[in-house]
Length: 311
Image (cartoon, rainbow, N blue to C red; front, side, top):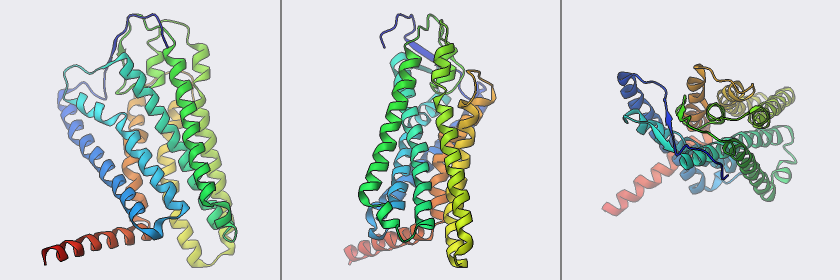
C-alpha cells in the first residue's frame, strides 16, 4: 500500500465539538466500555470454568464475547480519549490499522451470529441429529471459516481504500476510520472502489436474510413441540434475534448504499460499535438460566474457597 500522498495523519471531528457534551460523552462511553469489558470477560470466564457449558452453543457465545471485546476496543478507547483531547488526531498507519481491525472483528461478529443461528436451528429442528451436525470438528470448522472470511473481507476493504492518494485532505467527519468517511478524502476517482467495498453491506444483508429464514423455520417447527420446549426455544431465539436486529439493521443502513455520508451516520454507528457489545452479555445472561446458574455456582465456589482460606 505504498501510495504517493502528503498525509501523515488524520483529524477526527468526533461525535460532538461542544465541550460540555464531550465531557458527558466521556463519562457515558467510559461507563459503557467498562460494562463491555466486564460483561464479556465474565461470560468467557464462566464458559471456560463450568464444564456443563462446554457445548456448541456456549462455544460460539464465548467466540462472540471475545469478538465484542476486540471489536469495541478498536474504536472505543480512542473515541473516549478524544473526548478530553484538544486535537483528535490519528496517524496514517494508525488509521489503516484501525480500519483493518474494525472490519475484521465486525465481519467476524456477523459470521459468528449467523453460525449461532444455525446452531439454534440444528438444536431445535434436528434434535436427534444435533450432536452429529454440531460435532466438535464441525464447530471448530465453522469458527475457523468465520474468522478466515472476516480476515479476507477486512484485507480487501483496507487495501482498496488505502491504495488511493489523499493529497492534503485530513479531516474525517467521524469518530473512527471507516471506509466511506475516509474515501471522501481521496483525491482520485473512487467510483470503482465504492462499488467493490460495498461488500460490507452485501455481507450484512445476506447474513441477516439467512438469519430471518432460520428463525422462520424454527418458529414453524415449534408448532409440533411441547409448551415447555416452545418456551425455552423462544427465550433463546428471542435473545439472539434482539442482538441480531440491533447489530444488523444499523450496519445495513450504513453500508448498503452508495458512498454517501449523512450527519446521522455517526449516531447510527454507535449502535453496532458500542451498544451491541454492551448488550450482548446482558441479554445472554439475564435471559439464559444456564448462564445465570453457572455464574451463581462459580461465585459461590469462589466465596466458599475464600472462607476456607480464612479458617
